[in-house]
Image (cartoon, rainbow, N blue to C red; front, side):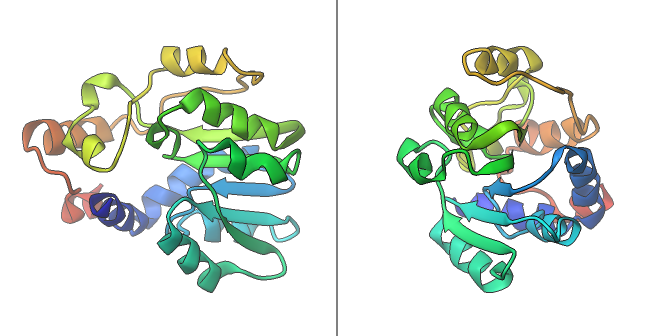
Length: 204
C-alpha cells in the first residue's frame, strides 16, 4: 500500500512522537527480541541501541522493507527475515525462540487476528511477552484505515475478547495518544484525506 508507505515515513520523521511511543514499550522488552513489521526501522534502531547484549530479529511482510532492513541493520547482533504475522507456516521454525515479540501497528492488518496472536505465542519462551500497539475505536475507522489495509480497529473490550481465545494473559492494557483522535477524525472522517498532513504531524 503506497499510502501506507507515505504515512509510515511521515510518522517515522516525528522523532519526539516515536520516542514517546517507544518509552511506553521499552520497559517490557527483555532478552531475545523479535520485531514484527519493522518497516523503515524507526523503532528497530532504538531497540538495537538500547539492547546491545540481546539477539534481535527484525522482520516485515514487504520484501522492499526486508531488503532495506538488511542493508541498514544486519550485524552480529541483528538479523532480518521476511515474516507474515498471519501465516502459521512462517513461524514453524521459530518455535520458543524469543523472550519478547513486538508488533506496533501490525495486528490490524491481519485478517485472522486470533491466529496471529497464537502464532506469536508459539514462538515465545516461557514467561515471554508479546507487546502490541493497535489503532483504537471503531468510530475512527475512515479512509486512511481502508487505504492502508486495516481490517479493523480495537477497543479494550474487543482486544481482551480476542486475547481470551488464546493462551495469553494480559499484563497491561491501556489507551495511548488521546490527542491524536481529533486530528485523525478531522483528516480522515471529515476531509477524507488518505495521507497524513506532514506539517500538522511536525506540529503534533
